[in-house]
Image 1 (cartoon, helix red, strand yellow):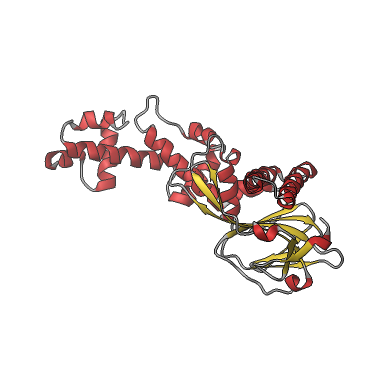
Image 2 (cartoon, one colour):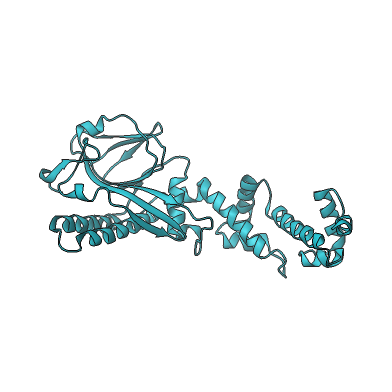
Length: 319
């Protein structure tokens, strides 16, 4: 981008932006991610001038996606310093203190998207978690340590091409340019998420993010509730395959997130179902055991007493 066309940003005078972008900095767009909403607050395309390099560490209540199109430097997030160069993408979660300092020489040019995510109570992954854009994004925003990902040259070209289209529309300002810019911004978000998912190191990040463990635990709970009484019974290996992990690793995740193993969760769900049926008073204990997924009524009685402190027959008489 021609640096002679850069002017101080009205939102942050320490940042330089392309002339004309001051008209679209406050653009607000809602981008649907599965059942969740990404609320784009503002867009900035700035050059880190010397004043910007010397700004104090800061945090803000929104998330930020930083794509470095030119230059290099160091980005410090919560006292961890990362090398950033051309083609790096960085998702800074809300509330994380950060500061950037350019290397000597060419100043870094960075596209910054400020956004919020309005999560849905139920996240529809549509397959394995890593294949979902909402799962990709939330894993980046809920990781213990934010870090940059170097994008592949092919993905850099796609993102740079999309940025050029936005710049061109803003310079021409023909009829409908605002709508065109919005459509390009939506495409830009999708390209950035897709490129990050393909970046070196993301797979390792995704496998170990604490948010993914929470997501997997929620998914297992949902599967158990939907298949509590299924015949043949639900198995650990089957659920592990549905969650894209090994059965041993799945049990470790569940133990960490819920303090229970898969079989303990399954037993708990069956016992809760049994207690609800007993309280209705329409079935005897043997019938309740079968309706709750137990093949052995004696085992059911022992497990019930151990969990609740009284036998199924006692609840049946008082229900």
